[in-house]
Image (spheres, rainbow, N blue to C red):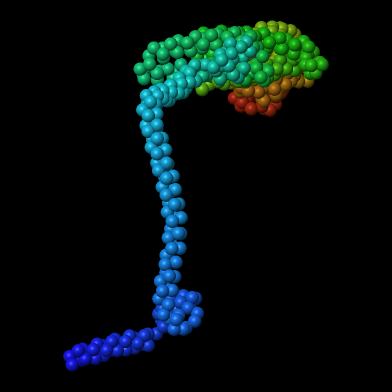
Length: 508
């Protein structure tokens, strides 16, 4: 009973288990179970017939198929293994090669370490030498002259390059003070001595060149170079003085030559005519001479200003210019003096003498603004005094000759004599000239005194031969003529009052 019951229980248990499995299979939703679907799809490939025999051999087929698949995997992985083994061998060989190369590099590094150290040291020394070379080149550039600059200093022709190099020599000489302050006394003193030699030699050449070319100041190219040369020589007073003396000597000779040509030859082609061709016309002759000099001497002053303009920035050169102009103009003093003295010594009309005096006096004032303390100015002042004396002497002689040496008897009609009329007419002509001249007040008083006072004496002496009433009439006529003449001019008020008083005395 017990056995039977056990069997029954087992059968119930088996059925229950089968039922559970069937229920589970039936409850399964194959739509969501991808793995099962894939397995069934694979199964359909070789499970084509749903027979009893096929179902019984299904397990063995699946196992065989699994075994076949694993064998395929094994075959495939065998090839992979062989490939990996080959890679391993290659890597091992590469590792050995790298190890060999590393050992060789280490050996080479050990062998070349000393060479590398020497190369590094040499590179450092090379950089140091390059820097020293640059410093040396800069030093030579700043404190030495190039071959081209030395050539320009020694060349026989003075050009702009000469002055540029000379400026550089002076700059190097000045910069040596910085070297001395920096502690390079030996080098600095050597360079200063060398530059001083260059500078002295250059200035000596410049001095000789300036002496040769100073007479060509009007030439445009030479003028600019000569101006620069005088600026450099101004720092050497002795050389500067010699060049200025040479310049003044040359220009004085040229000025005299040009003045004599203007007197005797005239301009180019005879236009304008020679000044001496107008010697018969005293006023024009003297005026042309003084006008020519008034044009030429300021031209010499302008030349000197151009010549010394480079010196103007260093010091006041006005005294140097005045002295040079005086020196240059001194040459024309003698020919001018001789000609004017010759004119004054000739038999000239009094009016011409007064014209000459006025011209000389005018140009004295003109040249006072150009020349100070020169021989030319002194010469003109002497000629002014001489012309004034000559004029006054000639006027006094004329008066003396007309009325004092030869006292004329009054006319029967008691009118002024011809001598008196002539002298008053001459006085009128001279006063007309004096009224428009510089310093006319003094001149007019002097002239009136020279004529009127002697004339009054002569009139009184001539009237003394007449009867009292005739004498009064004659004197009144003469005094009236004098008053009529003097009344035309200014500065005659005092003299007119005295003549009026004498006339009133005669009326009484």
